[in-house]
Length: 484
Image (cartoon, rainbow, N blue to C red; front, side, top):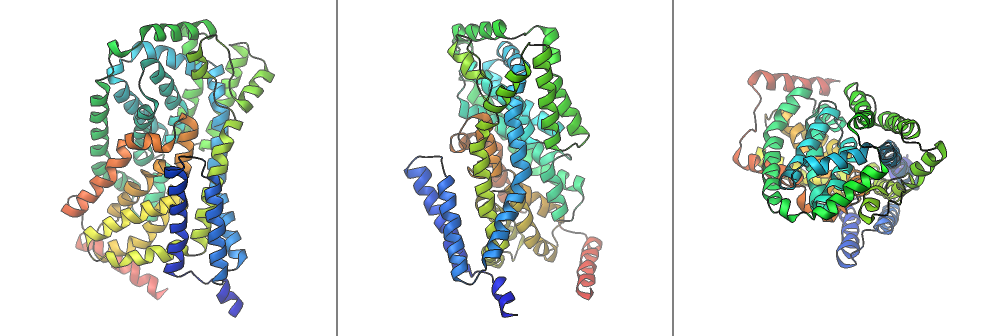
């Protein structure tokens, strides 16, 4: 019996605080002072220190190991998706999909509205697919290529792509995070989405306005037309870009859209799209199966004789994603240890004292979710743990549960791309080729959404209360649970 008690002992708040402060201190040294984005060893050291402290305080190794396995289990499907996206990108390049998008994008999109257009198109794509990752790996990669030709800095373009991509991750009924937040807070999915409109839409409008203003400095005069003409010539000489072939090259993207609409898993969608693109590349572009296998493993490779075109297209590959995959597994292992050993609970429960009124509850929920995002490296954990812990406080104060679900996404979902070692952060860094800390200042949707949510909490705007009938139903649910 004593063995069991020791095995499930939960760390004190002090120990939990030391564990997370060590990570943050080391990250500051690593990223800010040393200026290195390679935080793999930092996470390994943080895992080691957490393990030693927890075991000294009586935690069994078996429990810690369960946390590591739990974190890796969470990471497995996203990391597999990431690996297949590494294979998809060179397939889309060889099939002509990305070259065609860049070719026509350079001719059709005005530089002054490029950032606005990138954010808007990525928003529409993510709403249709419910996946910010699919959007980033397809339209996002194309926009990064177009930005080079237009002379728009890559970090700003990445910020526009991510701002648009996040919108669908929040508002699409096909999105897994949207469904998770609604489920965790026990609220109707469409009531949850309707509630999020009040924070997400204003944030996105602000983001679009800023991208329009920033874009004004990029006009026809700011473009090196010689460089653009060189890129266009390089693309047309090495790839088929005729309108007829352009339509064929879009088949992989259309397949992704159809599968997303049919709610096929993202992993299956990546595999099917990669295979379709591979067959187009073989039968339409003349590549051999062995060349495609090499591209999908090591990245697309071509020497066009034009440095800018080579830089645009020589990318992707399964192996190029392994840096990101290893970081994802380490980040989720650390988060799994904190979750399974009760370290996160010890931290969040201290925050419960700040939930005496609606304003404090929502603000506490927001900062708790951001903290869990930083510690667990997973938006799903950031939605799940604070969302469940604070739900009873929303009910006690008579606040509708769709406010609770909205707050989970206003803090957990939107900030996930801003965590360098988190699943979304490592994905967008690996896919768009821009470091998280470089694009972070330009991800306006992610930055403004929590601020708008805090403003509503302070003013009481759009913080809806239950009707007496709704509150009576909730109270009865709690009484029934006590009886059970």
